[in-house]
Length: 445
Image (cartoon, rainbow, N blue to C red; front, side, top):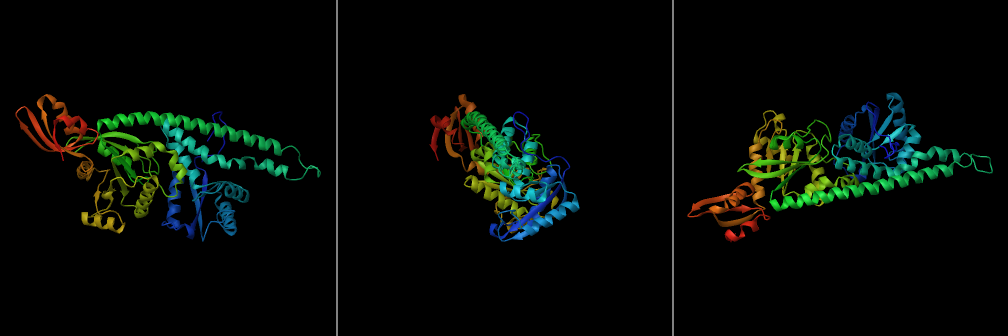
């Protein structure tokens, strides 16, 4: 990561650097994830960041240790393993405090980053839009700001070798602190500028959303754990060409496409950034565009990779994140993806798997890759959207066939009878559209 003038402030992962992974199972944190599985996921993150994983080590603790996060004895084991594997980067599976990072780097004599720093590096690689890059840069600077001090510890060590009276080095602490304050002010200004830029983007998006609300087009947001197949499902449902790779966080920027549902109902489907365990709230908050799409959605499709051995933990992480975002009140349809990889599994088998994972009994099983179950999924989406619509009984004259066409496209028609000089229609309409039909309504049911 660099400032606007090109100065490197935080060293990001370099392709094919040799990384040693360090994890901890903390009893007081009560994570549902076994530490071995969490390190498996960290290894996938490292590979996505183009690192070469050369080893891993973990420790079980009652609570994090204040100085190193792990115990001092384990730090010595990490140092020995680093020598053995020739690792030039240590990656911790949990977020470290600035002091812990500084202590570990001094003790291990190599660069140390934590899970948050690694995810930020991946985000920076995968942000494609202007807004996405702004959001990533903001998150990076907010992460970097409290960690600036360690950039100048070499000056502190020189200044601390002796006092003025003892003939020690004089005058170094001042320049070091001055440069630190200069960098801090530069970053604070950059953060303020980035927030202003994102506020402008937010205003433009809000104007777009207001126009979208007036059209009554329903919005469906895809949510789920990273690499669950959301982008593949979006492509299969809409014919889009969104990047879909077998990598964590392959898609970062929210993407919205039009989808034609059964009954010729038009809706908008939005792919959002995947969730992941141990993702700090401040990092989630930086990606407001994605969160706003979820908040605006009429329906959430929770996509679960049913074949993953940690599918239950994945689903729980997504549900917890939705609660933290305050959107758990929205209707959710659970979509079990990748059923083509469950060889010979029947519908009853899939239902049993869902029950064992504690998922809702109301599910749809699909293979986005092969197109299996998409018709059923579309029908279920229509049925759930209809529950949020207003039931209307109206007589529309033939001169207003435009309204009939609009009803067919945006709502659900249950009864359509042609009489005299108009059409008698009974069905459901999005609340935003209902006023356009008020003058022709026989009754609102």
